[in-house]
Image 1 (tube, rainbow, N blue to C red):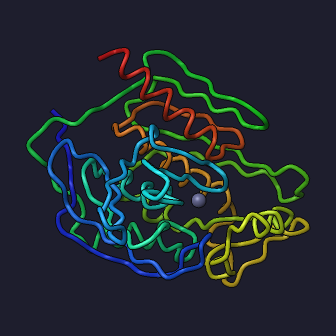
Image 2 (cartoon, rainbow, N blue to C red; image 1 turned 180 degrees about the vertical axis):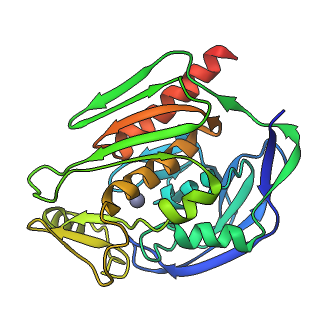
Image 3 (cartoon, protein in one colour; image 1 turned 60 degrees about the horizontal axis):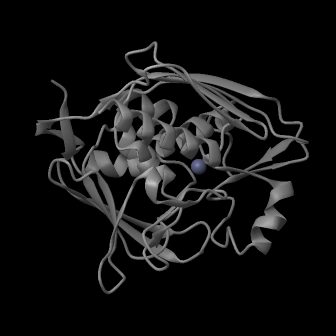
Length: 283
Ligand SMILES: [Zn+2]
């Protein structure tokens, strides 16, 4: 029997939030069995709890936003969720003092390390909810296709990225989710923004906290960033990071093989919702 896990202790981390540009503090604490991942807005009077569930997703523009009301809302949950997924944390409270977690360097490495600082994961006295889709699933739309096949006892993601109108070469990476390798292979991959999209994002009031500390920019086929690239295929690694985060919104330990062509939050979340539906049908 595979057991549920929570954090061994607590840890916190502060920095600037990507879209709102304000300083934010995020604190993670252990939680009892069957809690799931709950985001708590500690800056709001009622301290509302927002489930880290695909059912609570209200927006998928540039990041995954969850909410249970107009005010009880959390932006950009995918990087912290990705790190929690990698550590197999089933239950924990993510306290936040604002709308959005700190973006840090645009990767999930600070979150991955924060969980290590909290002592990592510990087993709890209850069976974990695991799920493998009973048959292949396909979600597609626009330039994206994501297929999931039941033929693996791990979670494996094969991913291809390429940006329309952008001459940066297509990238491919295949990754099997594992707590140890995630820290070296996936967590350091930083957010990328296509320069052509930046103006539009700024006009939408997004990326106010963005800087070359927090992201790399693709411009005229070149990649602009302060430090050198961490991987030659850093973009595709970040896409896998985001997908691992969005799939955490299923609230289950998933197994299967995923083939993702130009994935993004809209289709990642659609896949997560489909998996929740299939699991409910089977129950
Ligand atoms: Zn991301």
